[in-house]
Image (cartoon, rainbow, N blue to C red; front, side):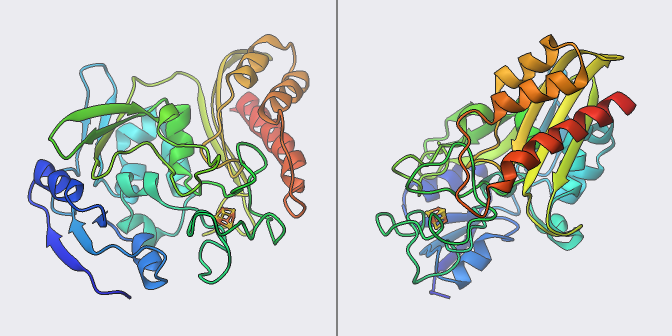
Length: 327
Ligand code: SF4
């Protein structure tokens, strides 16, 4: 590990100010991803600002009827919160599908949003990777790309975003609340938070330098059956090949409203309004699942080892719709 300096933040504004003043600074909270990246010398911060003692570990009601989740709320605490389990079950289920119990005890809400891809080549210094070393190339394009993206990628990077939590937050239209180095707060809808790789795959989100995530606000609860289905290579502690977060309200065969977001397919949680509309308009479950999958997979491209994700996405969506009918 490369030497670095360390400070423990005592308030949000000071933390953001300190980070904005030194471009080679990182915030550290649970450290479940950052420490691994530092040991591999993929992340090389000169300075760490420890935010674990900031008062950002509460879940509180908002004036709008939703919930505000502090950035330091641990994934296990968030999944177990009775309000989350009752009113935002898709989020609780997605959290419990992610990582191991030990990791969920450490990982935080803010950190989960910012975790980096698990592309094998990104974690292998010495092999070309545009995300790690811009301009060096993408080893995954012609390499082993079983985990990689089929939509939203570019010829510079085909990595997927690994978070389960973010997929559920996308379906719930979460709002990410931040503070910058000048002490100004802003709200970023999760739909606008992540960037597609294009020609700059090393830029993954729209945070400014030093901008600190302070909380995530959930809008008022969405009616319907909340489901999170994750398909992975083993039953625990594996990243999604395909996952679906769904909130579906139906009367028998008729779907009155549907929200869908997909993980494992794209460099960001993947939500396609046309797919939700197709579910609402089509007459039966099988037909609507096909039309919705067509919309989700518009322009989908496999890269060899991950071609199976195209069919797997269809089947996973069908399974989710069938489950919503049984619920
Ligand atoms: Fe790097 Fe992205 Fe290519 Fe993986 S897919 S090797 S992260 S550029």
